[in-house]
Image (cartoon, rainbow, N blue to C red; front, side, top):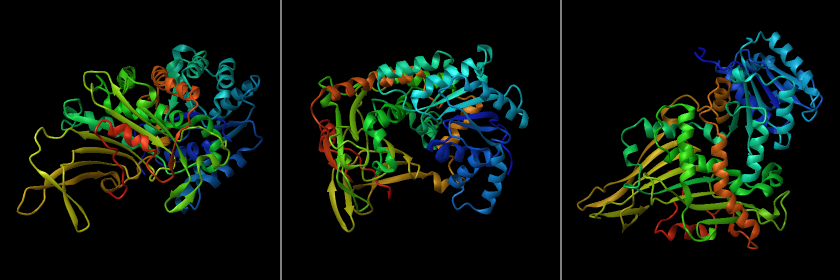
Length: 511
């Protein structure tokens, strides 16, 4: 295997290394980066309060990462695990960080880490420990002087607060000792290959970008659907968060920014984030009426997923039996700028929907004069219906792909039009496996590239938009509208778009 020209050699410290995130996401991603040659000698130091040795730490991770691994993978792991170390400290004890400094210095010497290498601190902890962690880094001298600020990068996992006020408080906590450039707020959705390809697809091709504006686009739909419920004890977290906090405020709004932002002057982190910020500043409700006219919240009841019965949300493990937490949300929003004025954007996300799928659908306007009819067939049964609009679909997950739906003449003696699909599938075209989201994002942190991370002003702008919705729900005595598990959400979600003469596209993984 040939080594890449640019590596991300850094000292990596994972605070909260005994947690699930480290074993399921972080170390597997670092292992893949090691196998690809991006990580060669970087010491990876797990930091947590549980008492364990390096050998125990490595054995636990091996059991998770190397499940039914082949011989070559096991051989690679034996080399990789020499980079893994464990340091026991109580992250809430400020005096313990002095010992951490000594341990880090000793391990860097052992691995011959260059003195000017960066240190990456991944806060894989609860937000309640962020203040202690950052204060400990400061008082122990692990935060470098401002002129060398690039030598420390601190990665923060969501949730980034639970409303605007708490997000501001969290931001204050982090920036009390850290510079904004040192903070990497990670959103794993932005590490997905198809998400990154949105910008290249738009700004690297001259065919589609001139069409993405109010003159040609009828509406844009963004769907983040999950078929899972509250497995692995997730109910305790989800019952305090819900669909808005868990997905819409971050993943959905970031996807909206990428598909609607203006071309940046330079393809660099600051310019791209500036353009995303302009979209968030221009975001507005799709209706001037009350929140119930442009937002729908739902909660799943019992139903079937893949033919198997699943319980209602209120009967899930670690969920209150009287919970009014939303497991589904749909919004109609607009963007007040020159490019998108008057174009409706329909956003939705939910649990226990029929498919696990994330996609962006750009639906174009119909031709000004309908000269043809369309034939739609179900098996051998065909019928003449109105011409279907052109659609550009960006499939984020699974089966990452891009496809264009357009009309062509159906063979025969008459001018009947039939919709067809021109598609590009990553798996069919590229032989290499797509890198995992955490692989890409961790490598970007080690390289000091913040393009795919959320800046503080973006974060606060997103919370500013959704917080009034959350407040209105908390003050209301009404409950979410129920929808059966295995369906595409509550009836009100269909009315949200039908009032505008539109309909949701139902994603199908077999198309």
